Image (cartoon, rainbow, N blue to C red; front, top):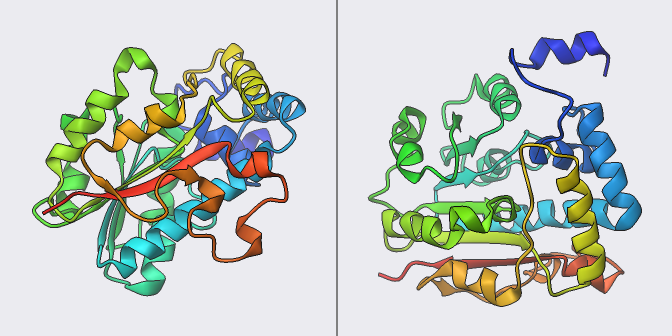
Length: 275
């Protein structure tokens, strides 16, 4: 992508010399909406952890299986927080193939992810993007685009996929998640995937440290199995529970890596609110 092409979709005032989690993820997935700083951060992390592209791919496949599973369970509206830059396999594309009337609201704090999503979704009646931050639940639930499409008196699929490890302990992600869990109706589902610190810890922590030292706005925090499990609160985990995200209801060999460490670099799970 040339500098002129980049300028066409970059909002004014954005510092493209600092890496962003959503743009780095876009690059790892083979997307085109990233900058040299994002590519450099990804390449440095990949030198330490050669399977990081597979981890990104497997996490994306996990998202697709979660959406299909929740559609099978009757969910027809989704709130995808930390959605990032649209790439192949987005929630509204997957859900729309099953039910074109399914409603999807993406949420992201990255202005570039929001700007590009607005362009992509401009013709959609059932999907939109809200520029907001997970750390401000009230701001998300009161956002006009969220209120326009989602009915929180009915069950919703709350997606926090590869997002919560970007929330530092100082922001208390457990307490924040409790506010989201309280707000959604009984019968709602919460999906989480999260970088781990108790599987192949040396490599993953080295890779995370490399990204964090690039001094972008986003800083990653790995967590243990127990720490991730408690994020579901009193919601009931559905089968197979909290597992390596590649091992969560794989649909075929392509959903699982030959490297067992790659399969478990992120834990993934889905839980239901009783009632």
